[in-house]
Length: 515
Ligand code: NG6
Ligand code: CA
Image (cartoon, rainbow, N blue to C red; front, top):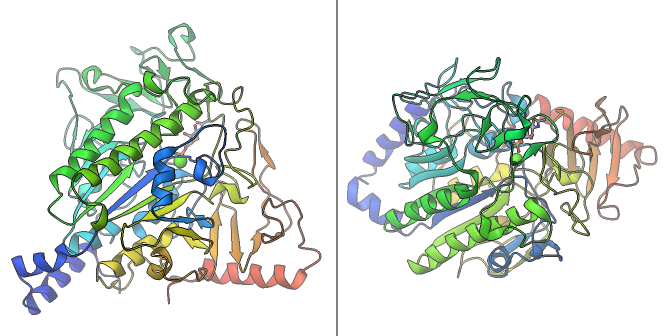
C-alpha cells in the first residue's frame, strides 16, 4: 500500500498527538535541529570551481565553504540533465522509473503531483519551514498547463514547500517571469500572458525572423520569442511588466533567498536555493562581465560564487553557521555551447569544465553526473575531503534521518540513509550508483568499476560537441586506474561486465532499491 501525501501528514500528526508532542514542546525539541540550505547550481561541472581544480580563475566563496566543510570527490547527481535530477532529489526515486520526467517544456504540468511524499514534506513534518527559491523546471499547474494569469497550482506549495519564488522552467524557456507562491510577480491584468510551445504568437518578434533585435544570438535552437533581447525556446506574449531582466536575475533570487533566511532565522528552516547560473542564456550582471577571462560562462561562475558568498555572509551575520547544514552541488555536468553564441567556446582557453572526467552534460560518461558536492556544518562536520561514492538521491533518506523522521512505505524508494557519510563519520561507498544519461542510457558504478549499458544513440552531440558515451556494446571502465574512461575493458573482463549488467537489470526491475 502506498500512503498518499495527505494520509502521511495525517498519520504523522496523529502520532505526534499520541506522543503528547503538541505545539510548543514539539517546537522546542525541533529547534535543536540544524537548518538546511541546499545550494543547487545549474550545469556547474566537476572542474568549474577552483577547489575542484579550476586554475585560470578562482571561486573564493565556494572554496571557503569547501575549506570549512567536507568536499566530496565522487558524488553524483542522479541524471545528466536538470528535470530528472531535480525530480530524484525531491522524491528519492530514480527518474527513469517514471515517464514524463525528461527535460520539461516551459509549459509542462506539475511533474511531482500532490499525492507524492517529498523531501520538503518530510522536513515540514519535522517542524521545518520550507522554501524554494530559483529555478524549478519540474512543471507547474494541472494537466493542460498552468494559468499564468491566475492561481498557478499545483506547484511547490502543494508538495511540501511553505514558500516559493521561482523561475518556472529555465532561463532559456518562456514564460520569462517570476512566480511567487501562486502568482506571477508584477503582472498587469490588462496585459495577460499567453504561452505557446506549438505555434508562434504573431504579435511578438522571434529570433529566427528578427536577428537584428538580438543582443545574444542563438547557436542552435533558442530562436523563438525575443525577451530582453534574447530569443528563447517557446513563444510568449503579454506580461510585459512582469518580464525578468536576465542581468538582474542572480541579484533578485539571491535577495529572496537571503530574505527567507532572515525571516526564518528563529525557526528550523530548509531552503532549496536553486540558481539559474550557470545555465544558458549566460547573461551575468555587468559587474561580473570580463572578470573571468572566459566570456559569459566563466563570468556566470563568478556570479554563482558571489551568490554563495551572500548566503554564507547571511548565515554568519545571524549566527547561524553552527546550526546550519549547507550543501552545495549541481544538477548535472558542464556544457560549453548549449545554444547561444556567448564566447564560451572561443574563450575557454585552458579551463577544463569537466576537470579530468570525460563527457559532459547529457553524457553517459562520468562528467554527466559527477559534480562538485560540498557539505559544511561548522562545528559538526570535520573539514576534509571524502572520496566516498555518493549520490544526491540519498539526501532524502539522510536528511529524514538527520531530522528524526522515518520513511513511510513507498516514500523515497531509491534513497539510502547515508547520513554518516554525508557528515564525514564514515567513508563507506554507496553500494553502487546508477547514472542516467539524457538519452536514457544507464550506467552503473560499483567498486570503482563502471559499466555503460549498450545504447544505439550517437557518439557525439554535434550541437554541444559533447561525447555522449553511447556504444551498441557494453562498455566497462576501471575508474581507479582510468578515471577518464579511455580504455574499454569489457572484452578483458567479461565476468565483471556480465555481473554489472545483471545487477543493473535487477535495479531496473525492482520497485524499490532501499532495503
Ligand atoms: C535542451 C536545450 C538546452 C537546455 C537543455 C535543458 C536546445 C537545442 N537545447 O533541449 O539549451 O535548455 O535542454 O537543460 O533547445 S537543463 O539543464 O535544464 O536540463
Ligand atoms: Ca542543468
